Length: 371
Ligand code: SF4
Image (cartoon, rainbow, N blue to C red):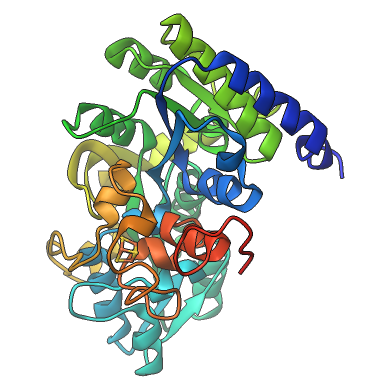
């Protein structure tokens, strides 16, 4: 399959790994931002191809993992209203809230919770069910924002009054900035997520390089992409450079996707947002603009301010900061497993804890485990 097989070619991957080994002369720590990249690294054993002095740590780029417990409580509250159909991506159903449980339990208790693949599916449902209130749980990074914005825009312009959004949109560059400012941060270079940069372009990432003097390499999700990104990053580290490099130019244009950005900015504005496990990060998320505020489910249903915090014994915040490997969490594989998750990183298909459990087994260390 074009654009897949050539990027999984073992000979190319091993050649890149050998070049990385020749390049590295001292210890370095690189964070891959995106949960999809974390899963690819674990799945293909890329970390095992690298020299021991080169450490990969896993970042906060899992949209489900960073959705705060308070927002899940609000979603669960909505399911108790008989007129509401709560539409969500499937990954969100098992993420625990504060005290209200999760959406799967809310569904079992009689709430009308439906899994959709797109906000436009939820909008179509609202058109088919005019006597119900359809709420879409709009989570994610810059990759989901344009479609969520499009759904809001269409609802407003078509006069669909029974559709609204419970918004938990976050932005990746402010989170990278937060990580670099954290005193405990060990990050010396970043692999940035190619799909987000496809939308945003590279300018904000370039600003991060300048502000913090760290190399940032935009890359993809296949083994050859990741190894190529790592090679670019370690070359910069070894040479003392801190530049933005686009190692995913087959998809990422410097200016990003202008149409998608226009739609996003037409509907959303930048606001402070809480990130699960990390707290409230300034200017790190999106909220509906005043012109679209009638589509804000939190306002329409008078949900008030969500409760902050609420991770219990889950150490997902440390995992997403890269200061704790998932298998170093005392609950990993013991009290926290995919069938009984204590935190979002064990639930999500992009969560780092789920990746360790799936590809390294219940102790998180096996080199051959394929769950
Ligand atoms: S193993 Fe479970 S409890 Fe520990 S950080 Fe991961 S999700 Fe949270």
